Image (cartoon, rainbow, N blue to C red; front, side, top):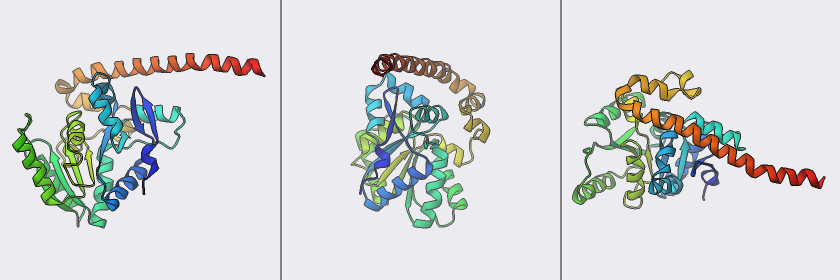
Amino acid sequence: MKDHRSDDRTDILGVGVSAINLDDAVAIIEGWIGQETRNYVCVTGVHGIMESRSNETLRQVYNRAGMSTPDGMPLVWLSRLRGKPHVQRVYGPDLMRSLTKLSALRGYRQFYYGGAEGVADKLRQALVAGYPGLEVVGTLCPPFRQLTDDEDAAVVGAINAARPDIVWVGLGAPKQELWMASHLGRVEAPVMIGVGAAFDFLAGLKPQAPLWMQSSGLEWLFRLCSEPRRLWRRYAKIVPGFLFLVACDALRGARRSSPAQARRSASR
């Protein structure tokens, strides 16, 4: 049976962001595993929204996903402002922790695909140690270059041979989203979930922002301070750009609603 919570979305600059919380996301994914359907999940932040503005293919990937979770407080706040008060942040590391804990209890099989050389193995060691009973059936760290057709077929074959229930994809955005969409149907697991930096966070290789920074929408600032040379160009572009576009969108919405309000007032 289809879970209609995954269909409830908020349009944020052309991307349909799922109007859910963490418990919803876990329940939906567990339903997919039980039904043995095939889906992918995009953990969607401001970066992905902005990338999709200039990449129609990426926008379609987000909008065709089984879920595009609100991974970032700005998306949560906008969803609430647009009549979705129940929406909460569904952050990649939190989603991975919750599903890992559940998987250790239910016996769901995990596969980790992505990260730099050795990261997926470190992730497996950390999570198996933290969640006794967790079954990790495989790890693969592909090279950063484009894979050949034969290499890609070998990756798909290795994943399918391991028979995972969940394939965690840590290739970074937007590469992981494009990979999941292009491999939907070829990868036989019920669900693929793109979690990006969660591999490094949960493997203990990079620090996470304090909870107060996460909940106040300042995680980007923590990450920028942690990796300024790699991230400053990204955030210098996306933060002011996102704020400007959201403000323009809100202004257009106000202008559209004004004539309707005037007509209602005149009819009273």
